[in-house]
Length: 151
Image (cartoon, rainbow, N blue to C red; front, side):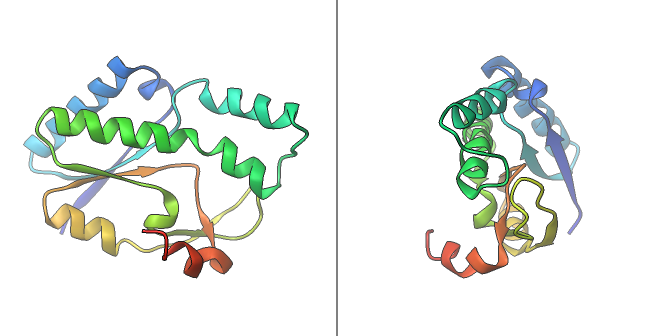
């Protein structure tokens, strides 16, 4: 099954109007017969605001809690885009990284992707669902088993 991945950065999803526009871009791709998996960043400015919050509380880059807060904006965007897609008649489902899962090393703050298990995403695509995946997130191998129990 042929799939394309469309990545939308913070500026392209900065407002609700832009998120609606992204939904239309995905709709056009699907109308052209393409299966789409969308990957989204946090809305422009959100990550910077979260960085300010965690730093003001004394957290430092490289700490797991720092990463957890700073990467949470992607979850909001993924949910909003899935809603926008549903509003125009496209079945969609948002995913946090641990739900895919996207496995990274445990170098918090600068993690590298080690593996992506596409089974769940491909099943969605096969069933006509557009998966909307959070960018900027991952789960370490040591937390992979724990994460699988939070569905």
